[in-house]
Structures are given as C-alpha cells and as structure tokens.
Length: 94
Image (cartoon, rainbow, N blue to C red; front, side, top):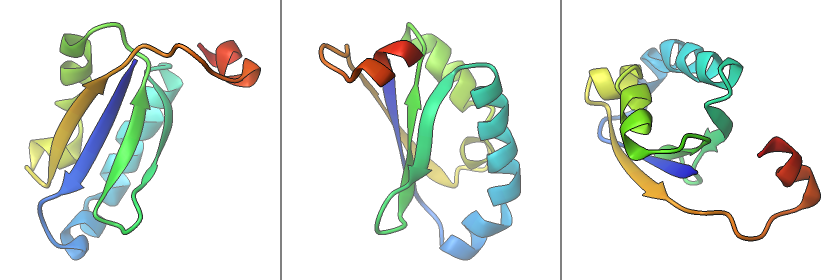
C-alpha cells in the first residue's frame, strides 16, 4: 500500500483551473479500485491519496495520468507501507 503525498508547486488559482480534470482522474482510479481514500491537506497546499497497489512502478504509472503531474503542478512523494494494524471496516476494504 502507498501514500501519495502531493504538494502544490503553483498558486491555487492554477490548481483550481485544473481541478475538474484531476477529479476525473481520481474518479477513474477509485472505480478501478486503485485508490482507497483521497483529500486535501490542511492548510490547502496539496493532497493525500491512499493507493492500493502492490509495487511502486504501478503507482508511478497511475501518477503519470494525473494532470497535476503532466503539467508539473505538484510534487509527488510516494511512501510505501505495510498495514499491520487496522479496524475491521478497513480490513474489509483491503
């Protein structure tokens, strides 16, 4: 499992102009069960995506589809982790 940590590199007005396309990207990956959770960071300087893939290469291929990556609007940090403890509800998702 991976945490994708996005940090914006541009002003929010540019992010907002590309947000609709980014949301379509998120929707597609939720539908394909690649993403489990996503949201804005507080303060709004980026976002977090919880990605349910097995290897970093697959995560990178997914990230390359995002408008924020294509237009170099955000920095993407990929953090791999192995869940060792979680709620029963979360286990059902996994």
